[in-house]
Image 1 (cartoon, rainbow, N blue to C red):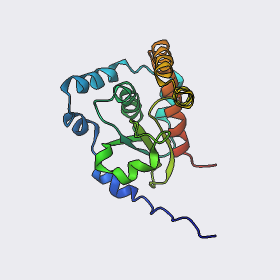
Image 2: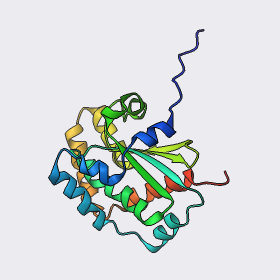
Image 3: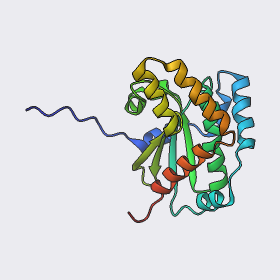
Image 4: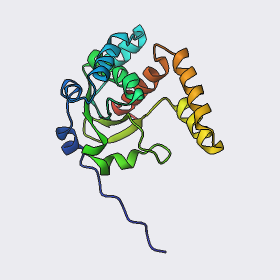
Length: 189
């Protein structure tokens, strides 16, 4: 039986160099209101002492390539969490891209076949891909997938909105992102 084609390796160092820092990405936002909302969201990120200690004591540098576009509500909600962790850490570094800037790379990180953002790709300091997150917490992605499966995405979105409202401090997002950062910073299996 013929083997399926193998996808070419992603040149993460080049992607990293091409991507923008937070301020440059935010300055290029399509919507000034959305950019202000993302910036305001940084202030709202409150870490527990244990979370602060974990993110400040990563054993190695972690790089995150964030596919994000300011028009998206999930980007407005979740990018401040990721950037807030990076601002506290010193070992977590984030660079931003839009889907259109690297479509072939982004296509590898679809969510249930959809081009949902944000998508955060966690890399070790040596640019080894260690995991990805997005566009929302795992529990929420499962609800949306169930909504698609049964043909009632609007009801699924209402459930996700209720979960977001019940977690205004984005604790679930913080936990999931810290876990991925710890994986990418690992020095032992």
